[in-house]
Length: 234
Image (cartoon, rainbow, N blue to C red):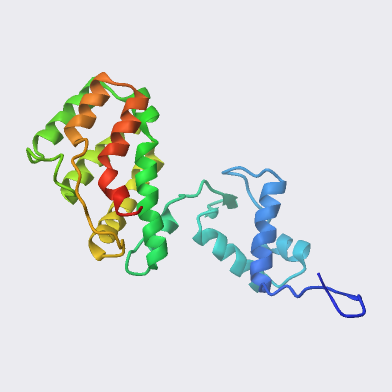
């Protein structure tokens, strides 16, 4: 709330459109009423009466909620709450050519942090056959893999398998979105610091740790594996 010189209060103007306000009101209604996936929401005419706006505004707000996957229309049931695909909208905007340099750099950093932190999930869920599959993947890598800075084909295959081992489908799907941007940032010159390649823990080294080590050792090894990428940031 703003005030004039005579201290008379003046209510701030709400610059959101009517559809914006109705959209937020509907989301708040879902939360307040603890609606879960599968629960039906009020019909359009009921919403018109409750919110005191036109049916056109209600329809536009509902279209927005459908677009983000929050509601859907079911035959014989009307409109119900859904379990939205959290990454579906992100996929449409995860295009390196439409993101600014600051956002691209932050996504680059995000992938580094994410991979260091997933050691506990991997150790909890890894199986003997996963180790064997990783060894097959590593066998296809160059002999000097601890000195080759970045090979996108090897990265996708090896790190993709690590995400798969976590058993977390959201992580796995997110990784498929992160790597293309990571490669773009690496090759585009967005990172100002030049590459000073240091020898690091290779994919083979990471597999050895997974087979004989522990989550803490894996986190430290993964940090070392990604060291050359960090050197381009700091």
